[in-house]
Length: 181
Image (cartoon, rainbow, N blue to C red; front, side, top):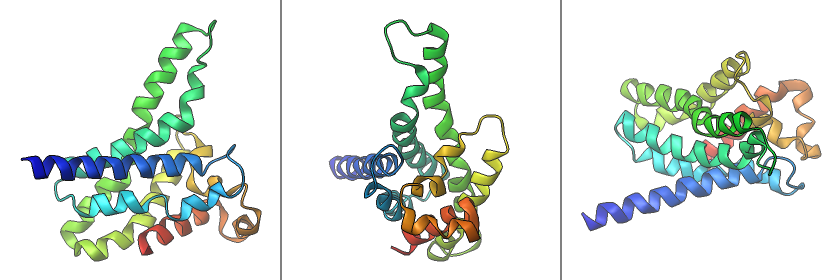
């Protein structure tokens, strides 16, 4: 129906905004931008709260992650006049494949909703996200600079706690703040 399409388009805009805010919060964008990390996931979380089926939850996650990866990994394809064709193909594939890994925490969230109430299950998301980041960094496919904790590298006042809790601890704090908001 027209009302469902309008709602779906509104959700897509929120997911795109979330992906853009995440991408803008990473270097080389100057200092005030890392503060965006503390609320960049809020539009995404609003959308996934309304998703009841796993396929709908993962579609929303993929769209947000695709926008994020597109804006942060575009340079890998070396888009220049005399660029290697295979490098451009692999860069394009990377932009489409890398967001698939973001489906891990959202899938875990879906199954947690089956055990706990949806409101309580959302508080598990920071732990799922950090577990995903840790496991992802162990693979050869990882891009550790896309870890949420590394997005705070230009926020020198806040990055100091990384000495105690590490980069994954920063990611946990970022996702937790987004969930609480």
